[in-house]
Image 1 (tube, one colour):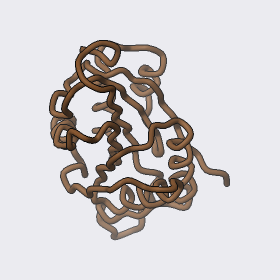
Image 2 (cartoon, rainbow, N blue to C red):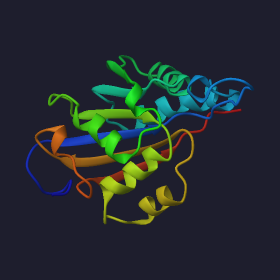
Image 3 (tube, rainbow, N blue to C red):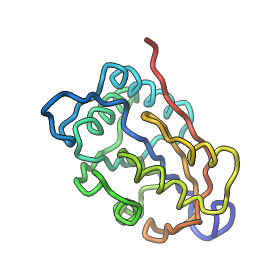
Length: 179
């Protein structure tokens, strides 16, 4: 099944890597905040998402401070931000853990935003897009930088049906704010 053929509505998984984080001495990784560049780039990511569409029906966000701050600054760019679920399991998650989190999305959600970390997010995008390799996917494989956004489309009646190789990578954006 691909995004172009299959049963069920067209769904979108929007993957957003947190914006650039700071590395304050003595601060545990989970508690690291955004760096000044990240505080500029996160709103730019929100604007880029609004322009690219579709906006999410639900956001699933890591509990790490830098991911939560990215979510807050990005979603503040929208008239009506969707509900958000903060999930500790998204922090430092690998592909199977991220896929489990995405598959738990309610059936009524057509567009899900996942805010998290590398290397898991990059690997998830590559895994879901499978052999639909093109130049855009190759770019993700080379580097999925901070504030990068990947939009995947697939057809399915429920999120639990999302499987490796079933999605089509439709867009990759690297959001950067002005200095």
